[in-house]
Length: 492
Image 1 (cartoon, rainbow, N blue to C red):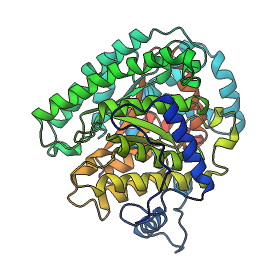
Image 2 (cartoon, one colour):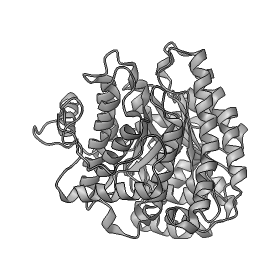
Image 3 (tube, one colour):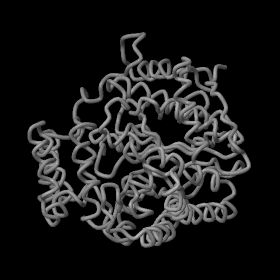
C-alpha cells in the first residue's frame, strides 16, 4: 500500500510541538511537494476516489464510463418539496434571498450595499433563516425545529470574532457563553435525541464551533505572528481560552461514555473554525496543541480542526497532520470544507487554479479520511473523526456511498464518527434528500447565533456563497417555489 512519506522533523511525542517545530514541519511538507510525492494516491483499502466516483455514477445510472466526474447537480430540476418544512415567515426570507441572487449584477449590488444596510432590516429579512437566534433559549428552540425535519443535531457557533479589527469583544464572555452553550444546549439536546433513538450510534454528536479570533484581543496579529517572541504570551492566552471550552467538552465525553458505554462516537465535539489563509498557520498550531491535550489515543475525538481544501497545499497539509498525530500519539479530528474565504483571499496563488481541481482535491480528501476511519474496527485510527462540510451534491453522494453503502461500512459502528453537515438556511434541498431518500441519519446543520451586529460579517459571506455555491437552489426558481408554498400555508 502506497502511503505518503514525509521527511521527519523529530517532533517530540511526549509534549506539545513547539511553534518553531510546527513551522519547520510545514516547510518540510512544502519541500516534499518538489520531490514529487502526492497524497491520496490510494486509500487505506487501495481504492482511489476516481474509481469510487465512477461507482457512484453507475449506481445513479450515469453514462460515460471512464469519466471521474459526476453529473453537475445544477443541471437537475429544482426540487422545492423541502420548503414545506418552513414557516411563512421563513419562506418570505427565502423569497428575498432568491431575488437577491437572481442574477450576478443584482447579487453584486446586494453584496456592496449589505455593510450599509440597517440591522433591523437584516434581522427582518434574512437573519432568521441563517442564524439560530440571539439567546441560548432561541438556539434550543432551533434545535427542536431541526429535529422535526430529521436533522438530529447541530454545530452551534457564537459568531463573535475580531478578524477584521473588531476588538469590541470580551474573550472571557465568549469562553463563558460557549461553555454555557455546551452545557445548556448541546449536551441536553444530544441526550434527548439519543434517548428516543433505536440505535444510540445513529445520532451524530453535537458540535460547537470555536472562532480563534474570538478568544483574544488583537487576534489577527496574534495568529499571524504567533511564533514571534512579542506575541508568544498572547498566543498562549488564546490557546488557554480555547482549552477551557475543550476541557469542558472532553470531561463531558468521559462522563457520558460511562453512562452510555455502547456509544462509539463522542457526544459533543469542539470544532476549530478556519480563518483567512494569512492567519491559518497560527490556527494550525492552535489545533495541534488542542489535539494533544484532548484527543488521546483510546478515547473518542473531542476536538476537530478544519482544513480548507480549496487551498493548493491542503493535501500535503492533511498528510502532515496525520503524521504528527501518529508521532505525538493523539487522534486527529477533521472538518473538511472547500473554503468559505475564497472571495476574500488576497493571494490567489494559494488556491487551486480551477473549480475542477478543488472538487477533485475535496473528493479525494473525504474518501481518504472516510476509509481511514472505517478501516480500523477498534476505533483507534489516527484519523478518528470526520465532518464532511459541503453543499456539493456529488461530494455528499460520494460520502454517503463510502460511509453507508461501501465495502467497509457493513456492520461497522465507526461510521458514527463520520458526519455530513450543511449551513443553516443553505442547501436545504440537498439536506432533505440525504435524510428522506438516502436514509442518512448523521446529518447536522451549522447554526450560528448571537447579536445581529456581530453576525453581520458571517451573513455577508453567506450572501456571497448563496450566489456561488448552490445556484440550483436560488434565483427565480426559489422565489417562485417559496411564494407558491407560502400561499398554500396562508390559505390552507
